[in-house]
Length: 149
Image (cartoon, rainbow, N blue to C red):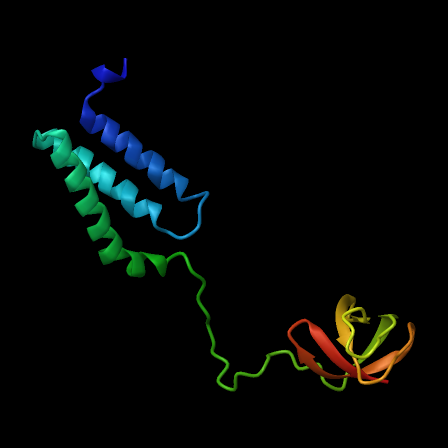
């Protein structure tokens, strides 16, 4: 049954399938191999070629489109930042604010937790602090607050 389908249509359908796979896989690479297959199918409609020539044409078109357009096209799919933070410091500075200890904080232990503005954060301190105590945030390191009683 498949032997009755013209090869140009097979190339075009395979190209569209490869491009649709890009929706499920990260990296924005498959789209260009799909484009190479579709272009090979379109050229095959006008210019008859052997199988080896088709495979070489597919490879060349895929790699050329990948090298030429990936950087340009990738900008459409990545987020854009409207404003820059020239200082490099975190935009949210929590130093000096108060939080409540919800799990005992033991120095140099990953177990301590505080509640701050309705969210639970990991916490570390130089001294042991018991559950229920109010603490002052000294600094924030990633997702952990350094606190003091």
